[in-house]
Length: 321
DNA sequence: GGTAGACCTGGACGC
DNA sequence: GCGTCCAGGTCTACC
Image (cartoon, rainbow, N blue to C red):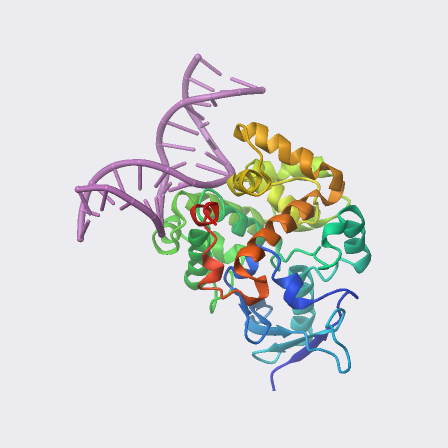
């Protein structure tokens, strides 16, 4: 009998809204099923990979699932240790550790999102996966990021899971380049994996809220393949939302939606000024403004089909929509 | 400190 | 079907 788990959520938590809140929900090995409203994810646990299907059944007599517990059905029996592992990984991935009060604080700063309740951003079960996903999203169009992550899971991971740092550290650059289509990122990805696998990168230090922002930023910029944009993006994935990862998509948003004009440097300064009132929530304000734009074009993210709608976010298309 | 060019892939486009 | 151009962030060399 496969293991079933129940995981409690913050009082405002809605799976379909809060899981489908950041582009990584469309990247392998994450699978959102718009028909069933379930989130499927293969996790590497103590004795091997297991597929977990996560849902949030609507409680009897209630019109909203907000705060209802998550139901998790595993593809096999999980040991006690594995159940604990799965809970920790799911909690990180779905940001169940962010309280309703923290989200309410964001809404006080930026009331535009209080009606929708937006505030949480989905991320990966581990910092390592977040870092690799960020590297595969740099200097490349979104469909290529999708391809890289799918192939990394298929070629290097066990049974389609995202590879562990140890697995990726053992991969050959030529394999990553030829079979995973990561291009020149091959050596950087393997070097990152080696740093995580050897313990040179201490995930606990990066995840620790007590670690100063400046030290965190400097440490991220020291990593191979991590520049200013990637470092700022990883910081928001670590829950530090005051810094904006400004890329070409941010510039497109500024020019097309906010009607800003000027050089790239000028427009970036205008964006910083625009979101400055949100202070430590600046990234949330930026991101959900952008996400609203996407949902205005494609409908609610929880209705997106991964292979079609989810792959349609290219700059050239968005520019003309 | 600022800037130019290389890095690699995939899609768009013209022929 | 083929060749060319372009988008995308990081890194290095150079001024």
